[in-house]
Image 1 (cartoon, rainbow, N blue to C red):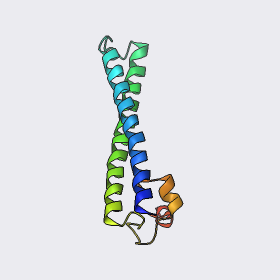
Image 2 (cartoon, helix red, strand yellow):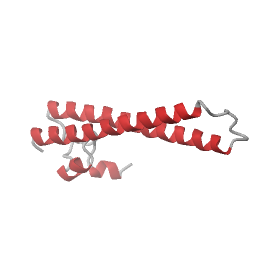
Image 3 (cartoon, helix red, strand yellow):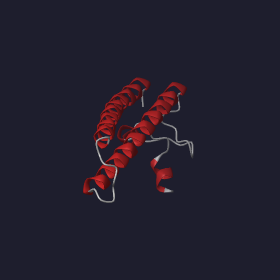
Image 4 (cartoon, one colour):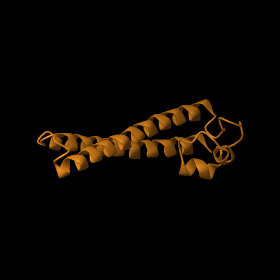
Length: 115
């Protein structure tokens, strides 16, 4: 894959992921703010468990999106190093279609299937 194409692909994925991080952080903050007016008695409050679950779910999604941003940063580093389309496990090529689908991937489909 051309360096320019790879860079554009990663930057597009990064921008989308940054929007997701912003939205999830806002959602988490809204849930936390709403729970401040809660009694804190999850056992007797039917909404308490739901709020706790939503908060945990959004926090997990936010953590994953932040991890994705870090992986995209490493992918950009691999583009600069000229090894973006080289599998980190076997040293073989990573198919362009795989990179288009998963811009931050570090392994070829054969190595992914060997897990």
